[in-house]
Image 1: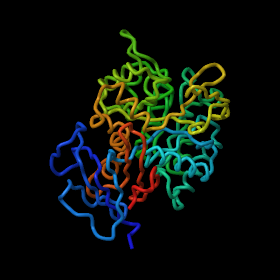
Image 2: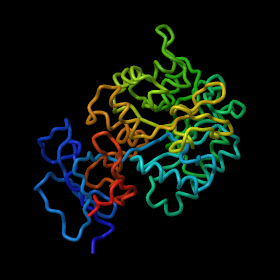
Image 3: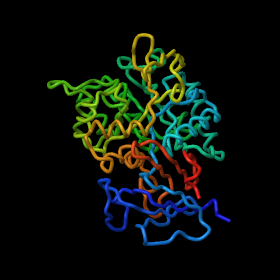
Image 4: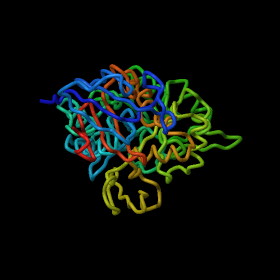
Length: 405
């Protein structure tokens, strides 16, 4: 009888950097490979003919498909009618299932700027979800990304302006004690922001500049204090002017900073994506979705943080026209970024996988197809549609059951 704890992936096109020897291929930067998984970890990566599949082990036939490390979304609010701010494990489970169907193997549940009580409830729900057995067939919840409430009232975006408040160490400490906070977006120019950035660093929480009116100099000061990322680069920040470089100028020019990007061709023009790719490269670009609860659902009206959002033509907007999250899925974001940047997939894929893992300090276990790494993997067809998703070596999503033998 085949073991459920062991799997052999055959005939996949694997990034050449993970193969033990160069292989001829029609896809630049890829070659045919076989991957052996046991107990949730990768135990071998071989080229055809190097090793036969062990007897009694299930096989996943990846013929005609591309195998990548699983996608990681560090900034996503919801999907399928559910949202992080619903503050229930059931919402997180439904989100995790949807994300896995779109190649995401790990994510940060992202909050909205809301009352202290509502945000605390969301963090506690994430803690409850992480303590139990996570959703079978779902992406892994890595923790919480706090988007606000310590942001600029000048750049609220779709965040509720009446809930924006100055950095508060006591509130931040309570949130951190309540659950697995891994990231916080804040405005570095706000009074008290540097102290909060320092507190985040002590807790190994990633500090991110976003929804910010910071000047170039103020943003650089925030980076010196410990900011390492920028939230949805280009959006909700001071822009680039040749005499006032702004937050955007600091993000594009400082190699210490990872730039999150919503690559939906709506939040950011493809030409601006290409500029970002040339400035940051895939090794400092973190593709995100910033998806809201409408992701995966038909056009209509949906709630986002207590505000009504109209979804039409893949755009999510408040009544005043402000963009309010997205209905993007990460595999489509990767496709858009690859096309806009002019990069080959072999060059662009890290922006959706290895780079976000690095930005969280998890690149020792996620973001690579290598021995000892978690078997978090995604199988894509030639159009970058998801064929299969594996989380800890278990099949979380499979488009065609006939591929599993």
